[in-house]
Amino acid sequence: MAMSEKIKEIYKKKVISVDDAVKMVKSDTDVVCALAAAEPKLFMRKLYSVKDKVKDVSVLTCLPMEAYDFYTKEDALGHFYHEGWFYTGPMRNASQSINSFVTNHLHMAGTDRLSYRKPHIFAGTATPPDKNGYMSLSLSATYEVDMLENADIVILEVNEKFPRTFGDTIIHISQVHHIIEADYDVPEIPIPPVSAEDKTIAGFIAPMIENGSTVQLGIGGIPNAIGANLTTLKDIGIHTEMLTEGMVDLFEAGVLNGKRKTLLPGKMVCTFALGNKKLYDFIDNNPGVVINRGKWVNDPYVIAQNYKQISINTALEIDLSGQVCSESIGSVQFSGTGGQADTAIGAQRSIGGKSFIALYSTASVKDAKGVRKPISKIVPMLKEGGRVTLHRANVEYVVTEHGIVRLKGLSVRERAKKLITIAHPDFRDMLTEEAKKLKFI
Ligand code: COA
Image 1 (cartoon, rainbow, N blue to C red):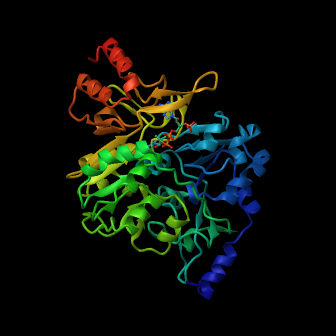
Image 2: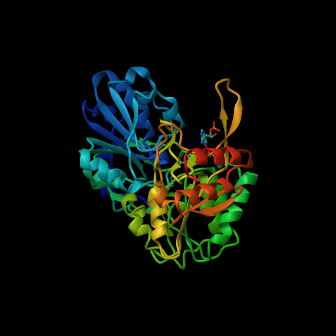
Image 3: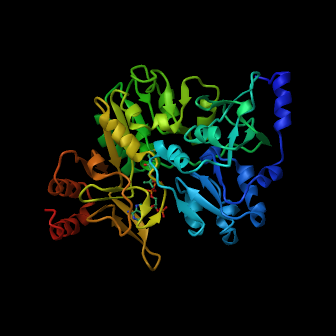
């Protein structure tokens, strides 16, 4: 839909170069960037160039997809601080003096930050305006609209290649101060292959999902694989934090239609989309997909309005009392809390809802000599400094390739005994011994 002459004129006046955009960054202020595939790459790549002109700039991101110089170069320290709502590989590999985790439940991320301070600059991505001047923030409304509404300066990279999506992503050009024209491809992530363990885990969960349920699938290999194994179900709906290509496959297989959803029936609801070209083509101009603000989509009270809401997430480790760590390896931040607690609690509050933590029983981890060895992901105690992502009182089903157990209402003794039954057989004796030492059993 081409811009009208009037909108074209307004648009042209707002176009600036990326060099001019980064010159607006001021010392002692916050810059907030859009999330994951919606991140403003040109702006973020150029930020480092103003390093010597600024100090104490906080750049707040979520799921950054590239190793940008402003947080990977050691000499950026003091000029920039990178605050992250969710770590990714490039952030994990960068200096941790520059990087710092912002604790959050995803549905509160924007609100909590805004209660602390407002951004000087919000930088994101968008589709070109339509004839009436409406633009789409495309791939995410998680916190982007809230930040855009509160920032002194709004800068958007306008890119025709980005899908035009509906929901809270729609904003008006009058809300935008500056536009950087961009033409890079939409960032994609690889689809993890489905392993034999994934299929076994999916085999435990699939029979527990009834036709007509609404499903949330979390981040990581296992939730993806489970999605791929739900093909025998009917009338499934989607209310999820992250929309993935696996959900498009289910739509194409006739599994998804959302017709029995009790909240926004017929619509696939999410707060951001991340995947491959197939996903991006599917959501482009698709009124069946609604991308709404994270503070609404991920609010457990909203999630619970879906009848039979199913939440499936994964974890790095779980202790014998049921505490789930999904975001750190010991004290080292690995990813983020994201919407794990939001979605688990929401599903448990939904009539007929269920929540699952699905994890492999072991992980292959390098020892001090660099040799990979299997370790149990079901552990007597979380590693020292391990962060609790999902409180043990909020854990319902736990699934590994060795079985499925339900922890709700159980004592620590009962929990420990049940969790040991789904641990890898090689570790069950060790876990039993440790549980005795801890006086759990
Ligand atoms: N101890 C040490 N290392 C471990 C481990 C443990 N207990 N468990 C896993 N690892 C290692 C793996 O070996 C792997 O290392 P490698 O890359 O060297 O092979 C790495 O950690 C990642 O493990 P993997 O199982 O492949 O992770 P994933 O990509 O499937 O992601 C989570 C899993 C838990 C990190 C991810 O789901 C997450 O961040 N969750 C929190 C947020 C969330 O659930 N959001 C849901 C709402 S959308």
